[in-house]
Image 1 (tube, one colour):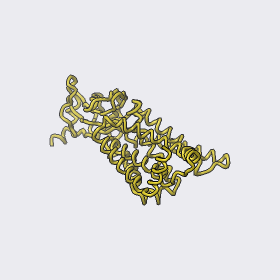
Image 2 (cartoon, one colour):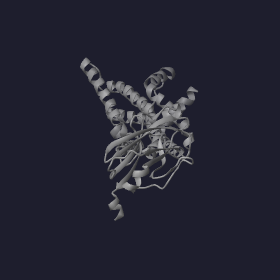
Image 3 (cartoon, one colour):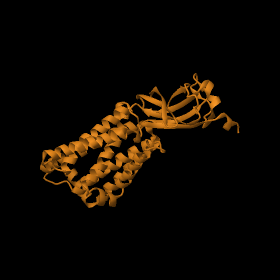
Image 4 (cartoon, helix red, strand yellow):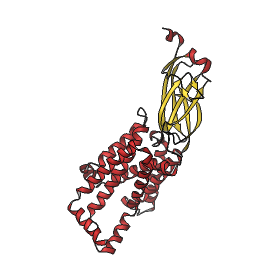
Length: 340
């Protein structure tokens, strides 16, 4: 076995580009696999998270290998291994975030950032000449990738809610970023230690305040509509509307219907938040259950309307901690305007 390992190392030293190519191919393979075979995503997620163990024990494992076999692991091998994990992780999560992003919201920024990170991870000149030499930038890419990977994998593997997944992912990113920051900025005075703690907490605080900009990676809407009618027996909505007159909704109100896809075994509480001209007027809780390919169907019925409901309306579909799953928009028009 040691001889085989040494031969592999020598081969890698001769052809280092093979690892980068393999990482790229595995990333694309994960993208296709998750996009077309979502039920197999949990297996990919497990393998992906296991790979992060290597990043945590890399230095200790390298020293042990050197003592045990009296050979140094080539530095290019370590760099390519890290690059492969970044590629695999980013290409794994991107299909989820592309599906769940509400593109006309701040979530565009987060998903766009992941896309840029993915492109950097497969572009050697950018990765090795621009990112890797700058320790702070490399750690930022590393932390972002881990954060996105945990957001995607935890609900699939552990069946915990999106809110819990976000808290775990953010907390883990903060804990792991502290020793990394301490390595880049050595603690040689108590003031620097305090400053690093403050910076770490500030990063976590910003992440929490901007959580609505982060798409819920494993929850997405398969069907949505605002309608005047709802068949509660078949759980099917009536015709979807974008414009409705005030007189049409005064008698029976409006329904907001959503079918939400969630991983099998996941129970989640979501909210339909009704907004009128930008102001929240109602927040209704709904409990959904994962596992249906068509999505779990749920709706809310808005009857207590303002005296004059004419204006722009939104129904935001939010997780328990405020991440946006999607949004419905419609207008209520004046009866005279509708008649014209």
